[in-house]
Image 1 (spheres, rainbow, N blue to C red):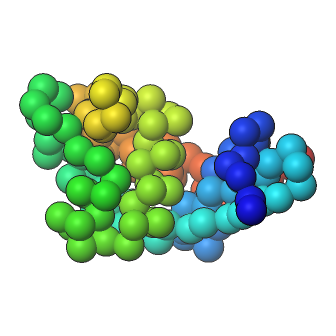
Image 2: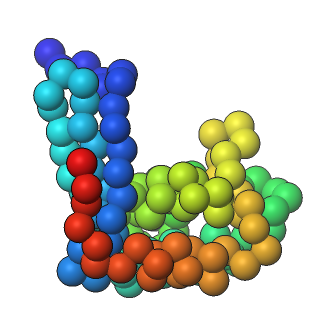
Length: 118
């Protein structure tokens, strides 16, 4: 039985117009998931429209509400959390900036199609 990757290296890059999340475990296992730009923008817009106070959202709720693929929604939210654009309180996501969509797109576009340096 495989267990969770306790010690892992998570990296994001933009490749062929998609946000790519690569996770490498210290045991040699790794995986890569992608999020197309359209899904990324939809996630950013949806979070931007949420109030900072209230009930927040989860990856599952957002994917279901916006009719998006769960894995792509997860990649987008994890990127936004890493960049400080979304914050988590009590396992729910809330906007951490006043302009979530604009900040998300700045981060996405700033990455460009750059090679990953290990």
